[in-house]
Length: 98
Length: 501
Image: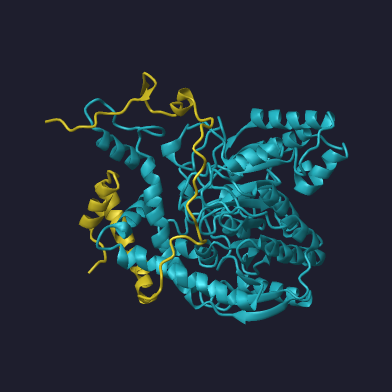
């Protein structure tokens, strides 16, 4: 039994907001199955008493002083926008019809 | 004047200080070289002729006015296209960012500019730094200057190929799993991954935030150290930046004394799957270091074999989250905005059109690894393996000062060889990944050519966190001993590229 099915890959693509074609699904699903088998090896080691590491070095949260500092102008911030209107990002409609 | 493109960065700096050459002359020589050979090599995605010459002219004026300049002022550099440079196209090798001009400079670029280093242009890379060959670039593959039918390594293949083709004396790369060191090994050049947090990630288009590290690429150890010093150090704009002085890397590169240094050969990084010519050059280099007075022992790091599977869970998980920002709303490609499609549909269509196959593979893998029901088995377990790898390093560093291994199991492979076999491609990074997971400093230095194919082999050195200087100590010792044998650094053995006029 594969570690991941074609249907599961299609579902994950929807979650990740990628509109995959049928050809891509045919190609990706078996590759992902192989990769997941490989990465599944991590379950062979690391017993319950091993703490997880999310980050290589010890970290403490960093805050900067709450002061105004220079930032992008509206023109700069909108300079890469696919569409802009009235100094704002113009986006497609957010709500579904009906 | 002999060919300016053959000089090291240190030599070019000296020529400018002594008034024998100007930055404009040096920059123009490299722009001419790019025009002559980059048609075949394809190291650059964008050449900023005007901007580079303007920067060079500014440095020359400052020098003429008697201003105090930084050591590398006026020296040209190639910049990996994953770091933002204000007003200059930045794509990260992806169609989704085609034509994007960032409105701000990354910290690395700010520091390069402050040091008077001239940025020639942006170099090719695997899309969003996902890959080991540049074949995942949306803009075509870079060719290895040692053999144009081979890949130059990746993801920073463009940066390493640029210096190996004498298109620039210096380059910037970024290393998440080996993307500076592996291309360095494949192109006979030096590639250094500083300690994680030793160089700033601000303005680096993120792949995996807990692993990404910018660093220097060069043809000599000293040049790499000079560039390292120019870009490293604390940055309040990066929340994981280390607030400590930069290790004395330039001093280490000038001294290069390994007498009494304890070197551990990692037992697990060798043997089956390693090319004989790679192992032969590696062991000769270890012997050479022994002759120079280093104490060499074998060290075991039993969990390194699980580094690759852990990495391919941690990286896609972080990447799937980081790349969610490409939603077609604020910048980048937008597809299907025809007035009938919803924002969500437009996002999905844009990501489908803008991302390449490897990026989709890894986003889906990361989405899977982080989804409820699988999180503990995959991502949670991978984080525990990360702990075990860090412990392997810690116990090794109780016995030795640095660890060494080959930088890669093989030399550069042929273009097309592994493109449809992700697992074979991933295995390129077996030796380099553990240092990303543990955050320590690591580098690849040229140590000869493999007998089978005459291609460069990289010698990999791993040093404890914030002991980046030890990398340069070993690199410099090896480089000068080998250069004595060869009558020059390894790059002097590279074949001449055909020049188009």
